[in-house]
Length: 184
Image 1 (cartoon, rainbow, N blue to C red):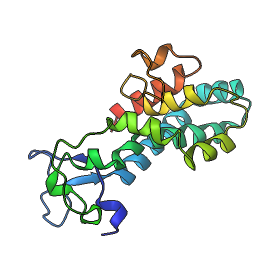
Image 2: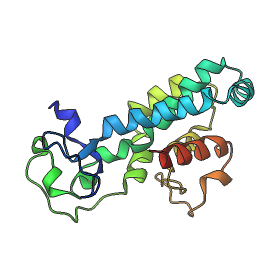
Image 3: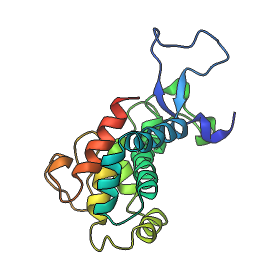
């Protein structure tokens, strides 16, 4: 198996576990992120009037808007690549990371890690180049992507916990991320 697919996002409990022993007992992070991206884009494509209306609000073609929302939704669990998230399950600890550090490895939650990763180069530079018209809205975009559990990820400056839907400009994306995740 490709090393990048050894990083789990979801595990199956005993009732859900595949009967075929050759099938892994987890869903890889990359598969999960791509599934969420596909659901988010498909969700919009199935509601043409909504897609056209929302695309017009940001002045881009409807298909480009659906792809953009899918891309952003797909980034939602980037923090599950963090070592402390990996350490939650010794049996699924990737050998490529060395010895398992134990289940209580310190670090941010996976959604906070997503927010932090989106602030660092090269990801922050890539996002800024994809969204040149944000002009200061990068924090809202990161919060909408990373706050898919209904809370904002902390940046370098701690903020009070607030629901994403109440933040400037992130209402739709936060709702879409939350609801597309609950479908998977």
